[in-house]
Length: 418
Ligand code: SAH
Image (cartoon, rainbow, N blue to C red; front, side, top):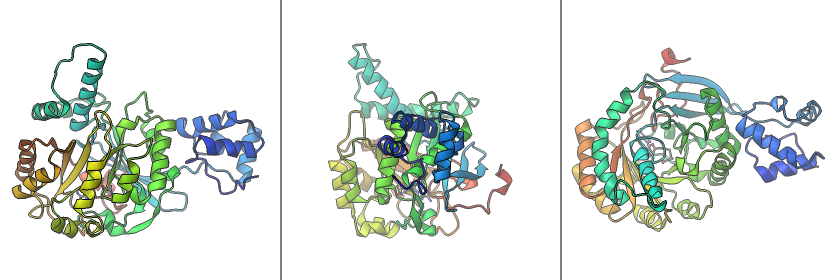
């Protein structure tokens, strides 16, 4: 008989739940009821699993089985609608999870500018394969570039629409570790160091908590997910992969609507390429040459650009998929036109796009945010070189919810706290 006193249900998969119920002498179909209760109804305690008899609930609870759901401890609401959640794990550690009702202009699949374009191509391509004449015969990348220009105005109009019409852009940004060990010089999370890895249950639990709080549910509501919160997912690889699998198979979030971002843990990029279920891949490039990249991302000493680009070029892309390279623009450091040209050279011929992020500032970060003209010029150079490039809109900067700002900051924005 299993020792159940340490068991948290959240994070267990179908097979594990089956052996758990069997060890209590219950029929295997109870595993399905548990899956439904944990991942779809998102119960917070064993007592709430109404499909089980009172007697069984009592027995499980008496043995010490818990759901292990992380709890929302604080909420900070931005003027732009973004919500930053401080989520407490059962051991008292906390992480941050961000809800962006309209996406952040970032990932394919997140309902944002680039994401919407990607989706339109998917639609066009499926029309094509279904024999219906598509509106355009252009190849995805070429059309992406053409459309991108037109989208600027459309995007502004979209942003002015009343709430509720932007359904489909909602994005949850989740954490994979408490803190981070990678030490990128421009990132606030780095200042925390790494406290520990999150379990698969704690990673999935963030999503469950936010879905419940926002009263949304996939697939009825289109939810996009980015592993871009605190931590480096590829340094917590097994738990991240298991969480991604549970999110697809049990929570019901579409695989193509998930993106994982890595600072460039090269061996794990090779491993990730072999996974059966894998979110889309984003790589934090952030600099176009080794000298600059080592300066702002010390991990580049271990896995330099040559190794990183070799892994990226070898990465097996699925139909209609491309790699995203993220590039944080730091004023006067990596944002010069020459740097944009270097990036174009580095990425030449790759099936990829670039997401530009002007630095989100924060205390303890020595860099400055470049002006918009500088960002636009950088983008223009990439586009001229044939590389689709997008500018991510900062979401929730006022509440420290934007990229690189997650540091469990509770001493700010108390006015917005709900
Ligand atoms: N560890 C992963 C995921 C978390 S960071 C990674 O490095 O990719 C998510 C993204 O935010 C990365 O592209 C990172 O480069 C970017 N980022 C970090 N600090 C930032 C800041 N201060 N301003 C803007 N973007 C930042």
